[in-house]
Amino acid sequence: MNSVKNVLLGVTGGIAAYRAPELVRLLRKSGIGVRVAMTKNAELFVTPMTLETVSERKVWRAGWQEQENPLIHLTESNDYDLALIAPATANFIGKLAGGIADDLLSTLVLALACPVYVAPAMNPRMYSNRAVVDNLDILKKRGFIVIPPEDGETACGEVGEGRLPQLPKLVEIVRHGLGLKSDLEGVKIVVTAGRTEEPLDPVRYLSNRSSGKMGLAIAAAAQGRGAEVILIHGIMSKRIPENIKSMPVRTAREMYSAVSNAFAGCDALVMTAAVADYRPAEIAPNKIKKKEGRRTIELTENPDILASMGQKKTKQIVIGFAAETENAVNNGRKKLLEKNADLICVNDVSRLNIGFDSDFNELTFVTKQSVRQSGKLAKRILAEKVLDIFVELTSEVKRTATGGNE
Ligand code: CTP
Image (cartoon, rainbow, N blue to C red; front, side, top):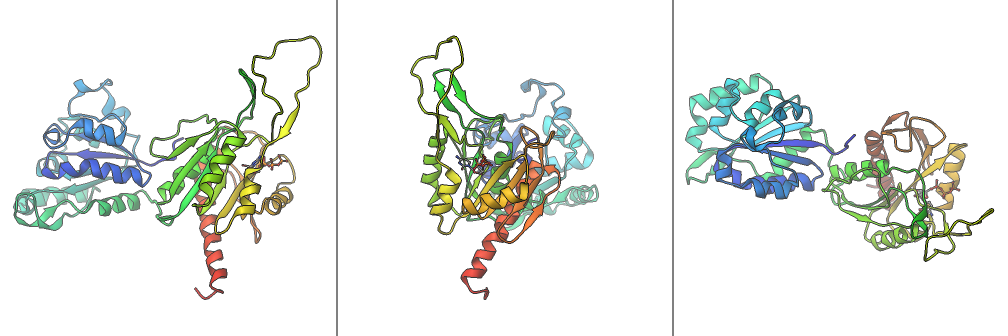
């Protein structure tokens, strides 16, 4: 399951289409995945290649002959959480009101399952034309959400209502429509995820079963809530979305050095990575050959990244994940103290169908003040819960710092 929200941006052929690439960039920066579908006339103002570059996804163009899949308007229709037509021309609004489906975007809109937002942008006289006003009323009655244009000087030099709203305002409307909170703006979060690998020889290594899904869900959720995120990751079973800033590492020691470098400048560290506690004491330069009888691998201890950052922390909130097969609460408390963490999310790895490689998990949240059970939830919902506790912990720190006089 992908935890990143996906928006379909429909670009139609008005002068404001030149702002579409920047709109795509801003939506993506706020953690939203964007697919662009454009009309033929939109291509007179902005090229598909520009939009493809900024969205990092193939652009759906007007004709079916440009697509690989002739049923694309149907197969795609359930893939979006929200659609935004911006700019929406008088012509396109008329087509939507009349239920006309004569290109890919207009056909796709008829098949969409998600809410559709329409941002008209045109000359003020055209915008106040009876036909356009009536068509917009029809759309509103059918459940489309119309974003009114702004008043001001339009591209043609006339003054009045018709300008596409400021792009950050459009992004805010989309975020609100997607139910995304923006409470982590200005917050820098380092998230670790995946499994480390400890080489034994050029072809073998020690590792574990972690998929990296929980860390990815936290990185995506934090970015969606406005945080600046860096995902430092070992081996992952899932592709990292292009809009998440990430740094790959292999071994525990590599992860230690990447986290140490990023830690001083961050506000929170979330260690979901399954870090190998030990590594082979020696890495054989050549493939180890088979021999008769038992063999022993000598192991040496890896640095404990969480404990080390827990010791170094100044203002940072430090969050760990504990994999336990018994005594979840007691072991969680022990790790909270030993690693000087602010929150330990205990994960019962003995249970089937949750945890490793699953899209679901059940966590026990242990802080100095409380113990809470999450119940079985999708990892992307759990990610939001972890961030809610981070927000709580931050406000507790602020309250303590101001002597409770905030
Ligand atoms: N962790 C770490 N560095 C390590 C080992 C673990 O930073 N070398 C972090 C993990 O990312 C996790 C937390 O410590 O957030 C707890 O990991 P866990 O494997 O449950 O605990 P360990 O400290 O390894 O203890 P044990 O294996 O004995 O339960």
